[in-house]
Figure (spheres, rainbow, N blue to C red):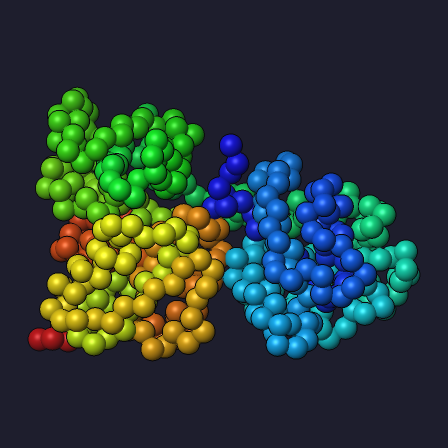
Length: 415
């Protein structure tokens, strides 16, 4: 079974048109992943290729269109290419000794501004011999680079090795989803409602990932539906360390779980795993400032077709409207699309982003902070609007402390 994108290192390949980006990817993967042509601009949209890059593990290569494209269609291609920066964990700039110049330096500046590790590939070395002033400049700036002739498969092994050496440490040593909250030899209970949106015969991705995370860390795991939770808890001689629920069942789970057992939701776990829990806790507190007529953006990372009582388009708008006591204006976005101007919104409410890598979620959080717009996620929004926010944060002392301090500060201002 393929690893989900969440656990894949996203490697973005950038450069001018006809720099040899597609040839480089084809040579590395030993497959014709991207169309190769002498005509500039052959790659029109980002092309994704998942593979195992041993000993690193699962990666996702993203071959982008030439970022120097021209014309109206070219501008659309460039826009799609620039969006790839948001989800790039490791950047690759492809050029050659003949054309290396300000354009490549601008891409490097983009990597550095976003704190994305990157490497340079000087391709077509068979056509454009090394210019020492360029290679010496790269060395002086401590930029890792390799010389290749991709269409002849020369330098590909060296390219592979430099990718392995440049992988970010936080990808290799990533924290667990919830096993650190449970501990080896201890138990967690996962509450999994089976509703219309649950895939037939399967669990949704965050539930599967949570189970695997617990097993990998030698923890015990019990999976129940919300109706069986109270009975399940009565079977324990030693209380479980944590109860995790689908956010939609928060109220029932909170009522059926003794107060000495911490509870939270899969979505809140993913606010920590995929994003910045503390920042999203701050964002959720902006719900208290909402008033009738305010605009709210609901952002979903995957593009499934909403059905029935959809959490993002139906339930959260209903709960927020009830909490505010007036009609709010809701917009929604799906997939990698994101509004250019988000300053019109009073709050952004995001899904758990289980289908993405962490980099893209952090990029959205950064954009929201730059625009001065609070951002939170589904689970935090539901817990806040249902009045169980503090209890849902108990497994996360640092985030709970931020909430309590902001709450007390708000009370002081109101007195």
